[in-house]
Length: 479
Image (cartoon, rainbow, N blue to C red; front, side, top):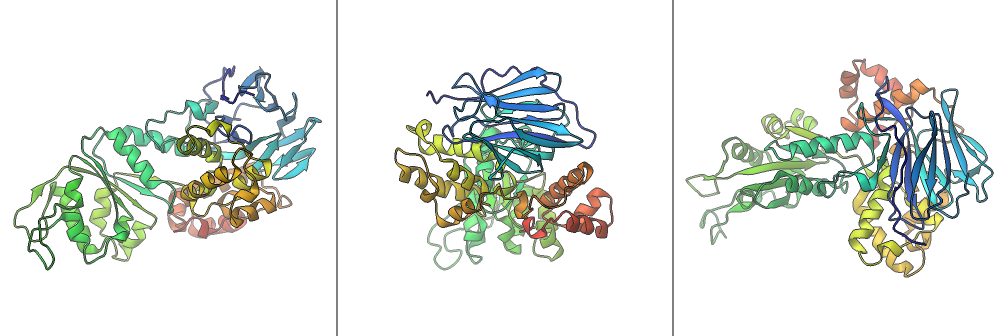
């Protein structure tokens, strides 16, 4: 079988959808194909769709979506383990239901074989060697293509590709801002790819100087000013020669300060002058030196809360916050796992990426594991597993115990890390949409309930009641 698969031959003609009244839409994601992990993943907006028939593509090298009539689509996947008519997803009384169409190899939802099941947000659907994800109500742009394929994404720079609608919209804003001098703060947990995104912004900026990345938390507080701003010979004991410092090293380029919240207040004051005046005064110098830098900063900490505690300068925060981006943890963008795995394989296994295969159990484990260390952890475990598999498929046994434990559960963990059993009382459509809206705002504001209440124009106590009702855990959104 040829393994040059992609989303080819799509005959979907309804390319632009109107915005939904609530600003959220249901989506179906093709996340991963075990025997062709390099196959392009995709998302399908279900705003104007009444049913999606899932079946096998007659072309073994192509996946596509065909329009079968008003509101009826056929999703065709290049998988010999999928029947020609395998399963049907359709609307029933405002909800979405999946039915197995008497397929040869069956249909599973969250690792459980089903004949018919009502879908809820975050369900993982397994047909043949393919895994799909259903999302009931995701926020996104008011207009956009009904079908988005990973291999058709405008990835102008590494790290700026996603199938998650709201994050894709934020990445588009970054591309527009990148050529300017606007400072950007990137928020997110450790390992979410903040430096990769910052490097991508630099590549899009067109600046002639270098990209200089500095981990503020790794520099001794006693040396941070001399390391950043440089020093003159004899300025202190041990200063045996002039040092230009990391800031001047980034002249005409981009200075990326990772974990900027770890900078001591004295260094913050000097950095503010650098940004305001465009000049740096090395330790022991009497005259400043001109410097032209574009600042990008990253943090996993709540800088607003640090300002309130006098741990971070409010004027510096105002100066660096021209644009803010929040990178969600990997557990909250699992729909990108197939895209990320495909890119990592092509990067690290150039010669044999198209020959790599995974067992269904291994794929289910990857999609069930919560990835507490995010993309960095995925990079850490993926390549060794592929190498251990040699020429065979990657099995669960090739992963460490933590991932094997996730496989044993045989269930797609709910997004945000909060377990939700299928027996849980079903939420109404309006409740599901409100839940997703609150989840999104909690992510954006780092779990700050007061900020979420202000954004919604509601009382803080009301937001707290919703959080309890929808079983959202604030620890999943805080640093």
